[in-house]
Amino acid sequence: MITASYSTFFKELAQNNTKEWFHANKRRYETDVKGPFLELLETLLPQLKLWDGQMVDDPKKALFRIHRDIRFSKDKSPYHTIMKAGFSPGGKKSEKPGYYLGIDAEHIHVGGGLFMVSPTQLKKVRQHIAKNPKQLIGLVETPTFRRAFGLLKGERAKRLDKEFKAIAEQCDYLFHKQFYAFAEFPVSNFYGSERLVAEIVEHFEILTPLNTYLGKALENQEYYL
Image (cartoon, rainbow, N blue to C red):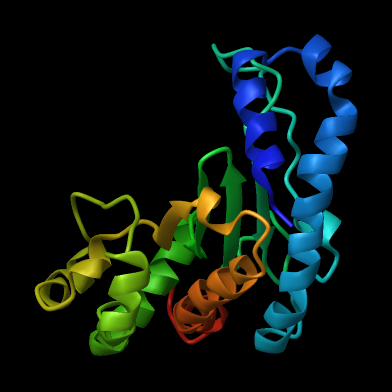
């Protein structure tokens, strides 16, 4: 379970983000942070497999490294101060719609959808939306979705291809270049509590119809690209 020791480690790491400090506290990281986080992933994966049988079911394959890639960054801090995981049929770095979980010292972050969208994928999603704009509106503007995630998030384009302009007047989501939902809540409310799993699963379940919709858009071969 995630406990106060989890948060304490990351608060201290934020103040001592060096290889020397991390190596001196490696046992704490394994016991208080990585171990509980992997246990949480292992608990979540069977539920995700029920929704999508192709979901990668190894928690270690869903886990992102705590080491930062600092090659092109001005910030040379070697470690992330958050544990992150991505769940998708194609693995955590898949281009398919998926689910995201991150836990830092203060907050639990849950979300999913399509974040890294190639031009080809974007064209397919927009054509899928244009075919039946009310379907997407019906998924992301329900009271349940709005209470859990607020508005559908994502970077937006300033211009659209001609084929989408008229439909965009009734479905503003066509301007999106990303299609994802995101929410956060205090981790301290769930220290040592089994309610954490239920809370994450509830958010993921609300998100599942959006992922299914986006997945169908990418799989559809009828669209001209």
